[in-house]
Length: 210
Image (tube, rainbow, N blue to C red; front, top):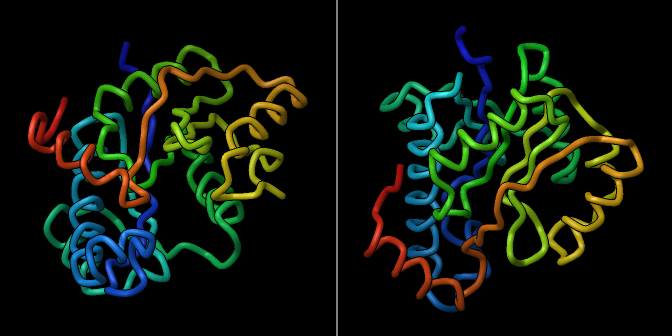
C-alpha cells in the first residue's frame, strides 16, 4: 500500500539586508545576515524535497516577487505563494486551510538547520498513524515544525509568538481540545549571535544530513 502523501510548506522571509535575520546583524552585519538567510532557505527547501513525502511549497514574506524567490522557483521548481497579512498564527493557519483540503501538512521555517529529512519523515509518520498533530519543539520554547491533519484555529489564535511560552501554551490548547499529538524530539534554531558557533560546527561536521 502506498503511504499517505504528506505535503510540506516552508515559511521563508526574503533575504533583504537590514530586514532578514535582524538579531544577527550586530554579529554579522546586514549583508552577511541576508546571505545567511538565503543559505538557510535553500537548505530548508532541499531538506523538504529530500524527505520525498509529497508536494513542497514555499510561502514567502513579504511576498513572492523577490528575485531570490523567483530564482529558487526556477532552479528547483518549488511553487511560491505570498504569506498573507496578519501575525504568524494567522499566516500559518491560512497555509493549513489552503493545504489540508488535499491531506496532512507539515509546516516548517528556515531557521533550524539541524532539521533533517529523517525528522520530516518521522513527523509525517505520526500523522499517518493517526495523531491529530505533531510538533518539533525548539530549545528556546517555541517550535520549529508543526504538522496537522486538519486546521486547528485554537492552536494559532492569540499566541504570544517569539516568546519562551509558545510551545507550553500550545500544549495547553492541545489538551483543551482533546487532540492527540506527538513531539518526536527537540531541536534548536539560529536566532541570536550565541547560536552561530553551533551552526558553524553543524555545517562543518554534517553539511547535509539525510
